[in-house]
Amino acid sequence: MESGNQTHTSEFLLLGFSGKLEIQFMLFGMFLSVYLVTFAGNLLIILAICSDSHLHTPMYFFLANLSFADICFTSTTIPKMLLNIQTQSKTITYEGCLSQIFFFIVFGCLDNLLLTVMAYDRFVAICHPLHYLVIMNPQLCGLLALGSWCVSVMGSLLETLTLLRLSFCTNMKIPHFFCDLPEVLKLACSDTLINNIVVYSTTGLLAVIPFHGILFSYYQIVSSVLSISSAAGKYKAFSTCLSHLLVVSLFYGTGLGVYLSSAVTSSSRMSLVASVMYTIVTPMLNPFIYSLKNRDMKGALRSVLGRVVPVSIGTIIGFS
Image (cartoon, rainbow, N blue to C red; front, side, top):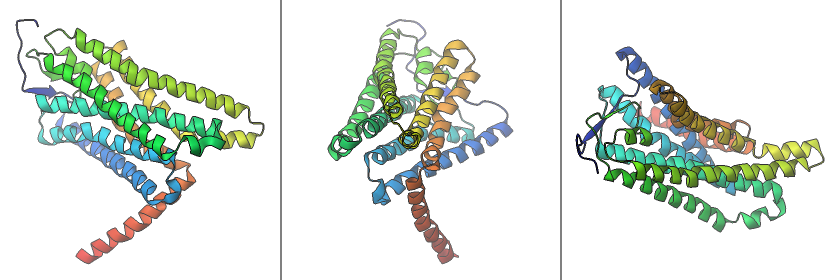
């Protein structure tokens, strides 16, 4: 470990969206609204799936897990950002920063793995429809979900624990609204070779390989759909995976935008905007994508809202 200007820091500074006070409060209102919409939308998806027996299928089981992961994913970063804006403080403790990195990687990887599992589910449903219920049995679905959780936690632990070996310089400013692992590594005074190897290896295992799995699944799906003779049959088969395809495109498109923006340009502002799309906007849009053209989901959501709204009105009347 190098000697010199090193310290075991107690806190970092999250520069985030620094600007005028008026802009800060405008951002506070905007991000609070987005967070509430994300939380409520994904929670409604989970409640609808749990309450409607027609949605107790592998596809919706994985969708419920994805919605829960999205709630946790946004809850890792947005509440701290809102607190910092509200208190006009930009600090985050060393322990808080490591915790944020850990949970951010866990739920980011979990999103990725669940999307891969859902692609496999659509592959089996379209390419092997007669054996779908046999292949996608409850035991396999449970193992796939549990495996996704375990792999995500193990991968995140590996990346986070290697940070403990680093010492940091006196400049603790992170040009982000959360503790982003690449930005934190840039602040280290000690050698980060091992950390970079771990990051690239984990990214390859938990991001690149699952993405190729999704591509392979959709290659098989497209080949199977094209072999269907009738146009109506093709549309029906393809429509079953349209929502998933849109979510995958949004997830990987914004994620790729984050890394391209940081690689192509040195502008922290550009990287910041790309990160907002990836960490905040995408989880908010997922519930709308899955419920927009899905009749079963729409019906289940109406049923949930029909039970929740009268209870809320009755509660208000009772306290008035």
